[in-house]
Amino acid sequence: MLLPWEYGVRNLARRPLRTALTLVALATVVMLVFVVVGFIRGLEQSLVVSGDESVVLVYSVNSEENIENSSIPARTPALLTASLDTAVRRFGITHVSPELYLGTRVKTEGGEGGLGLVRGVTISAPLVRRSIKLVDGKWPGDGEVMVGRLVAAKLGASDDSLMVGNEIQFEGQKWKISGHFAAGGAAYDSEIWCKLVDFQSSTKRQDLSLVAMLMSPGRSAAEVQLFCKERNDLELRAILETDYYASLQQHYKPVRLLAWFVVLLVSGAGVFAGLNMMYGAVAGRNREIATLQAIGYRRRAILISFIQEGVLLAAAGSLLSGVIALTMLNGVAVRFTMGAFTLRIDSVAILIGCSVGLLLGVVGALPPALKALRAEIATGLKAV
View 1 (spheres, one colour):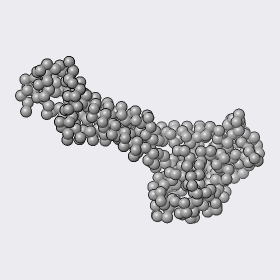
View 2 (tube, rainbow, N blue to C red):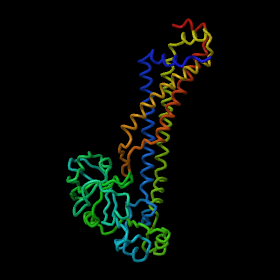
View 3 (tube, rainbow, N blue to C red):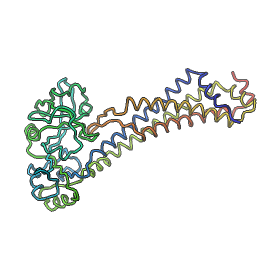
View 4 (tube, rainbow, N blue to C red):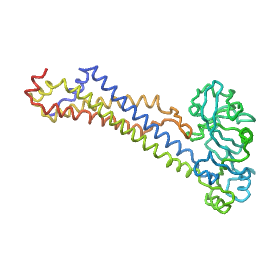
């Protein structure tokens, strides 16, 4: 015969301070799991949505997978459009975007700033980068820039310092902010865009970092790759944008593995914390346990009641942490080497976090309860 369900619930209410402390400890552990899993999911999502399966990137073969180190001749876009008929062409405009992309020190008016990512583009960039949406302001003119919605997080600056009309400084020049743009969570969200010719002038460079081409339906990236191999004097390579960001996922695989390892460490620490709390909770209940056995309740029923208490506390802690994570952590910007991205508390993060919380409730309750149940009934009845 099992103990009544209400018995375990009432036991939690009889010790409000101990119950509250245990609840806070469990909620803290689950919150840490939410933060780490949200970091992993946010990084993965940023890399997934950044690629466009219709866009081919052409850059220097010597830069390997780091486009910031790429340098190709300024005549490359004209050479590609003249030699290939693969890019989309509408109203006489070829959807090819020549770009200069590099990391540089950026300073805001308030003295804040850090390492930022700047991309020099032409007016054809939005035709190729189809995820870009102008949120407010206007497209940058001479001496102007527009900033992504996560640039403030990347620079470690305040949002107010990047308002339209303010100035920022990089490459020895002051630039006026003309607008803000969003890219749906893609890597561009943490970039600063300006006119290509202005950026080339300020950096004293006449070359490009890459050329992005929007492929016509039915055309293959293999055509561009074949051209790059045949013209080996140009030292170019071509890759689908989705493949490029997939390679970045492999590049950041050790970071993701380390983050999952942190989840295991946090969970393990939570188990030991739960054990410590539960041992303290059970230590003062020896007489209660012995009395229950003396009036006829079997050890299995008492053990299930203890597990019920642990699971109830863990479920409450997981629920509390889940609400806080969804309302306060979801969408929080995080600075990273590749730029910035937002924590993503999605269904996977909720599932993992709550599963860890419930596991803590079960595993934390078992050892102290088993130890208490192994004691002799007579000894337990004499306990103070």
